[in-house]
Image (cartoon, rainbow, N blue to C red; front, side, top):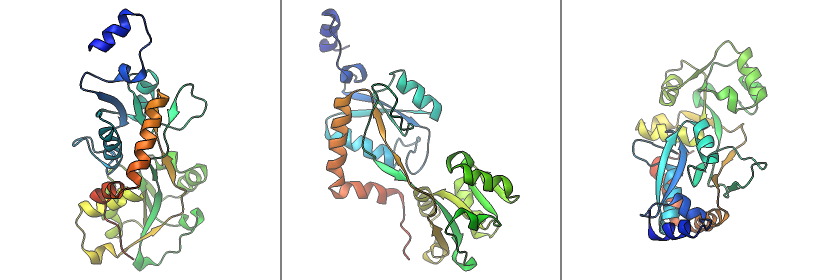
Length: 251
């Protein structure tokens, strides 16, 4: 415990939030969901979301200690004040003394087909008679109408291995796959597909994007984070983080 913290305790004063969560090395504790490449890669403690958060704090003289947890524990441990901030917990205006940052990025789930199939997919109804392979728990994330469609479709399935979704599509063992767009682009890059193969994919954006925030206990930490976020968005550094992990498909 550093001298400043001891002094606050001896005097019976209330510690500022940054003392509650910072160690002697000025390290901030953060709760994040378990590995979700390219946003969160637990093995390397990197990824789009983690790199953005780390850069903002590094620019302000802090380091980040990430705790990788199941989604429900991210929320619980953050609300129990075991961490100074949490990434990607549900936005909830009713929570007392929880301060949300501006959106650091958005998730956009998409439908992906093969160009050769010439599917016209502009709404959920266009998926009714197709073989669909979605990410795990997609029916819990894509809304009630999608869940109804999935339950009525005998060819609908969900798998955990998202890279395998691309393989199934290319081998024509499914008509469409449903993935978050940057997760799809991340696996396209990891598979080192040729340009000719990349051109076989067609992306159908029929779902609304959903924003992702950081949550804080301390409004001053939140405000510092927002200023840092706005600052890096004005530089090439922000886009460079995305480019590091994904390959954009050219039309």
